[in-house]
Image (cartoon, rainbow, N blue to C red; front, side, top):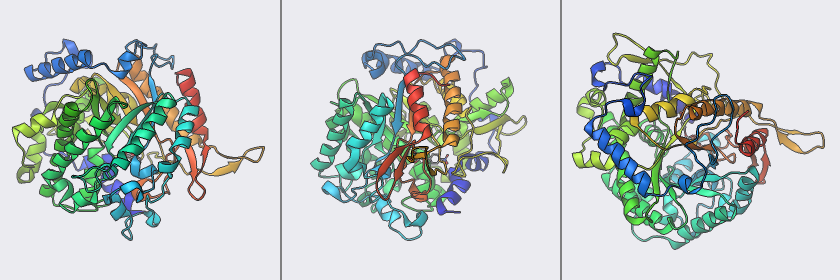
Length: 532
Ligand code: PNW
């Protein structure tokens, strides 16, 4: 087993993590929940929630969303069972800077914690690093041509903070910005709308040297970087996400130590890291709003625990609603509600983070959209008599998973995750900012001797997840787009180049790209605007 797999088994594997989660907490700490039959507006909302809904509504009418300007009525709900998505549904792909770019020493880029970590012996599979990765820094035109060929409407990519501020703060590096301007212009030339993530885990090493996310100064530096960058790029990018998967980078980087910066902090220091990270997100939202063009849409991408009722009866669905709040207490729930749940604080006791009311206000700054990364389900059941009234159901050892051990297959996660997020937090605009799978891809010759990858397992995974997404959209769950992880095989963090998530095969020796069967499936899905 590789180190990263061990980590995911013990922590990144959400079910494992949740099982040792919030047990021992009183069920009455959880706010009353709506019965399945009630819709959002018929439910009596608190004054605070009402205020938030009003703010969100005002933002929606004053800030012209990309989707709104694109004519088609995305609110039109397609018929159940038709497989059809609403006109204007945004089909995209997702990548991240350190996983695809390479060129780590080029054009004044500073060092990131992933350079340090991946070059430390024993930390990654085979000692693999992102030094070259997909060489996308040089080959981005070719990669955008692949997107165009697929018919993508949009593309999620991330900016490497150390390309913009090599030391994390201080003097910006114009060459870094130039690269992303060229990249985004090329996307526009191809008719592809950019969605930009500002932090996909490549923290400048200079900031880690001063404590990284343990240090509140990093939250402030992050906001400054985001404000500056969005200020420079919002003339050509309308959607920004602050962070990618706060949960993953804090858990694996600062608790398990299997991702950069490789620390295993005590519970109190770790709780502060989590707080500083959500605070960084909130301050960044404010900085982007202050410095970017009016109308810029701001959100984040988070792999929330997508709770799935083990059986879809009322009592277990109710358990799913309670669980989605408690299992996401440190991240999405505090971001949406401006409050750490009583159960979360009680569980931490003396290890609770230090925070102020002003912090909570910043953390819960209203968002224009929410990105949800969906890979695995978190199965839950009602547990009458237990403290929280629900239990997370562990995966049996025989439960099917993709090539990554942690990637348990549960298409219903793409139905229940967005649906419950919409119902519980009142989120009005959702994007699936990641969904995809690792496969043990093999190159085989076709009848003419050309190499191909027949990844029927990934294709099966995508078809089933998209069918469940369609189920939600056809019931009115406000998902406006879907970003497949990933366009290309790439550097899968501590798993190095061993675990491939691309729909395009990359030969890492020659950098040759070969579309897989799943790429043909995705192209056909986009062309039909329907899953079948
Ligand atoms: C995401 N889990 O990470 C990241 O955003 C990507 O950079 C990464 O390549 C992709 O998913 C595939 O791993 C995750 O344990 C890490 O549930 C862990 C989990 C999910 C996503």
